[in-house]
Image 1: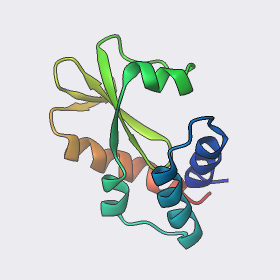
Image 2: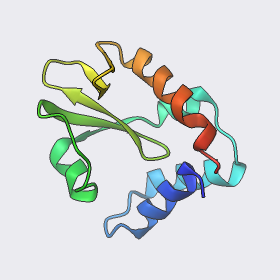
Image 3: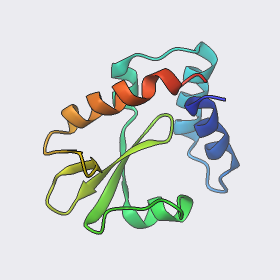
Image 4: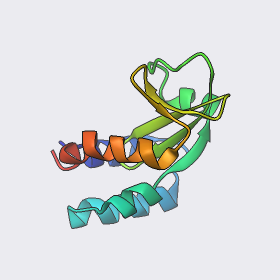
Length: 112
């Protein structure tokens, strides 16, 4: 199962479902394809506490204040300094730069 199907299943099982997100994920999943722009537009900011509620096992940076979440369950940490953080080797003040790295690393796994 690919990242998109896994994300759709996780969102469907939540008590408080995001109907808009589910509709968009379902549409992309049924179509079986997605452009970089569509994926990039799926990004939404979530505060750290809300993220941790549904992802308690994720190891976040100590200075993480928010998360940008994308289709496929992929996310970027937003640090208090305003930097976008993936890991010790990938961080930037430019969200666009980090999104391109994420797309290159993960797009092959969207469909399983």
